[in-house]
Length: 104
Image (cartoon, rainbow, N blue to C red; front, side):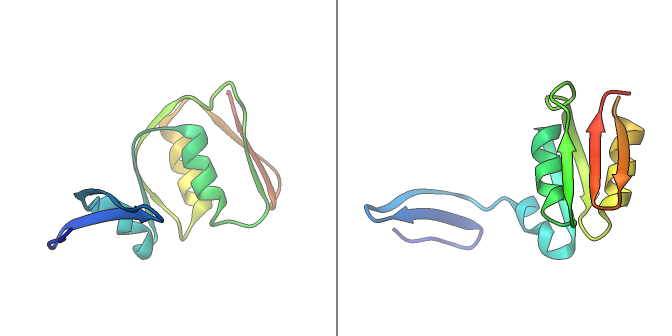
């Protein structure tokens, strides 16, 4: 299978499985940004949690809220503040290393 610029492919022990266009937003993490398009809050917080020390918990009551937008991976506290401003959630900081996101 031949790939041209702007395409990507997945492969495993069985060979090349499929070809698709490159998702330009997926590489924005290299510039410190997380782009979400209608993703569940729990998934977005799991991604943010990879870029901060300690625990970042998500209450199941708000886990399914949908998120669309760009968030800073370089300043996850700012990203959490942006989520709190735009979603019906409350960010509680028990310590610097233990943050919980739940219903207001």
